[in-house]
Image 1: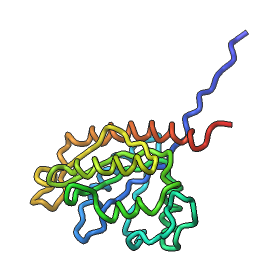
Image 2 (image 1 turned 30 degrees about the vertical axis):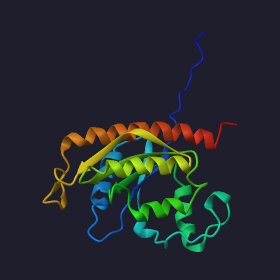
Image 3 (image 1 turned 60 degrees about the vertical axis):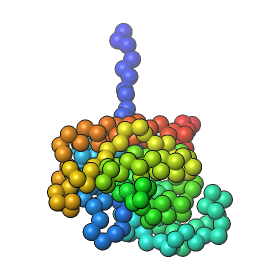
Image 4 (image 1 turned 45 degrees about the vertical axis):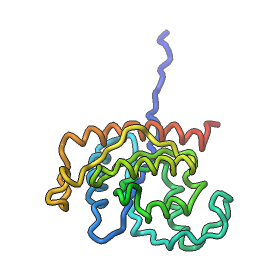
Length: 200
């Protein structure tokens, strides 16, 4: 009698948003995000999409009720809330402004709370110091909204990864750091999805 066959199903794909963290004219976040997306879309363990904050215009946070209270969002934040709620993990592509992240990204994060909870995030940054100081602030912000951040990150220098400080021309040696960050992000994103929706 032959032993029973076992079928190992592949884990379900998670949905990952690559968030463009700047809306300034002449921004570099679109070039950097598309570079990350081209690397990410070769994978078969997750679905990736670009999430542009320009598509979700919101004034400086004007909700009198803290988002953590779980009350309905103001009308201008509903589309943003629905998008974040639909995703399992995030790659934040951030510039560095004055040793921190952009105001528009911080504002977008502040508008929500429950939609962020028990998800994962990775970071790709750029700037004169590679944007690493912006990421340090983002890690603290993410902890407050209950998002787990992965250790690996990718960063790009405005001096060496941008031709004439404008055209994005990343050093090929940077691609493995993006891949490692995505490896960790997918693993954590998949694990945390079970926290939000535990098996029956």
